[in-house]
Length: 183
Image (cartoon, rainbow, N blue to C red; front, side, top):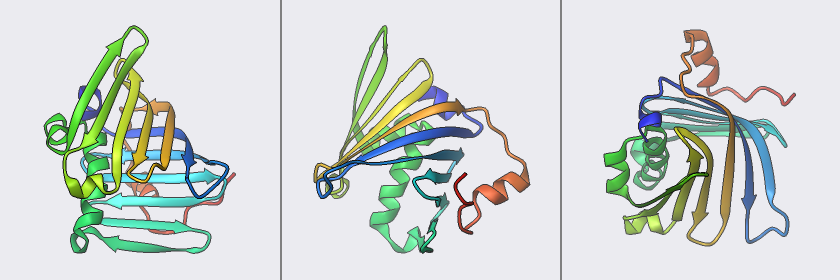
């Protein structure tokens, strides 16, 4: 958590697999994740299609080829709680993490695992647990198990936790405009 808390900004490529009870095959995607402390997160998917999810303070925007939507989190306490949990993770705020989750930490020569079980009943309606795994100060994998059993596993590659962006880069990353086309 100290490594995450000390990050000036994070940029990482990701590969994600969603296993949904309603589908016989998992959904796989790839893209880039950006985090600017304390509360700006952008997730740009390039495969299988272009999309962009942007969390910028109390505003969440989603855009893909079909269009987009923006939600004001101050008007939706449940959505705000859900989103703020991920911001707490990326900020590496251990005290806030402990107030929201019951942590279970394990480490050995191969790496570490941090399993987080939500404390609040409202959050447990959506999330059964979040598991983070890595080595040293690096986060390699995050797994989210939903209350209904659906599972999303995200692997991180080429992680840079010392990223500093220009104003032009920040404007592009956090723009509510559609994501650029996949390459």
